[in-house]
Amino acid sequence: MLLTTSSLSAAGQQEQPRLRQSTGMQPSQSTPHHLHHASPRRNYHSPAHSTRSSLSSSSTSPRRHNHRQEENAITLEEYEEVLGAEVWVEVAKLREYARYGIPREVRGEAWLYLLGIQDADRSKEVSTKKQRIQDFELMDKEPNESSKRVRSEISRYLRKTRIESSRDIPRLFEEVISAFCNHNHQIEYYPAMVNLCAPFVYSIKREWDAYLCFERMINMLDEHFNEESINEAVAKFMTLFHTCIPDLYSYFEEEEVDIKEWAASALQFVLSRELPLENTMRLWDTYFSIPDAGWMDLHPYACLAILKHFKDGFEDLEQSEIRTTLMRLPQMDMDRIINEAFNLRHEILERQISDSGL
Image (cartoon, rainbow, N blue to C red; front, side, top):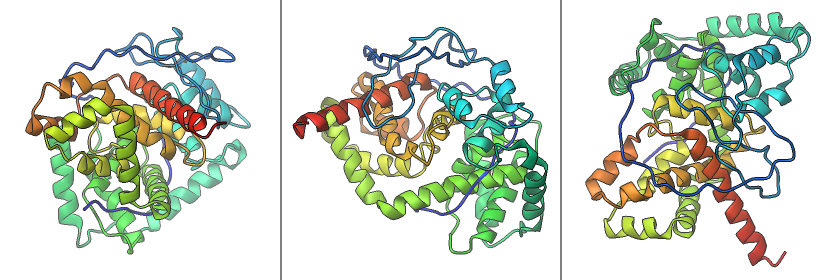
């Protein structure tokens, strides 16, 4: 049974991991939906993709999103201009940019502001950074009863991902997770902590900031699943799955694929166990751009978008192959996935409005 967790926060500059390119099924070629934007917005793209999805700011009214609508990219220089402000960092603009992805060079620093670790007032930067360092140095990071399990899981994760880095990544993992477990005695270590920690360890240069971001993520998840149990979340997801992708739902039933097990992990650990690291970080760019953990409402639709993306491929596989693929998803165009997630949520909201007669 998957476990929920509690408390986390902060990020800094990022390592640029070199990831082994995964291979997998060819995605289904569904036609993207269209979104009318009030004003054009450029989006940042990685070198592997010349154009990306365009996302609108979140709102209570459903809106459509058009994949690859905008050609121009938000440049690294534009991010540096926002982050390098002398008096006040415009977090609202940073959120607007981050929806389209954050360049690796500044991802960690941007996450610090998006997660509320770093104050937008630059006059407080030195004092707050000094306090973060002091607090982390005072934390107990010594090995504990879970340390052997932590090291084993870190080794498995690094073997699986085959990530190259000039930094002592195993030590950083262990320091952050040990500090968290020692500081939060009510929370028992569980293996998925390594997956949840990885984006911060690789994106953030300073371990005290990686720790705070990790803690913030755990707190957001803990608060969410205290209000809605994982069983309730999975039940809602299964209803959405049956509604949005009925053919695949029926095929999984025929093949006796236990999608509930996958959904529990994907929902509770934000796809960090299933997605390649680079895909996870790109997804989290958009998530962290949404204030007040509002991304938690979008996340089930991102999980659905992935299932829809690979629908045709899944329908050519048998049960064991489906399970293996779900547990270790191939590299994919996350901008397309994010775009489809917004579209799926839009469709469900429209249907709910129609059914209520509004």
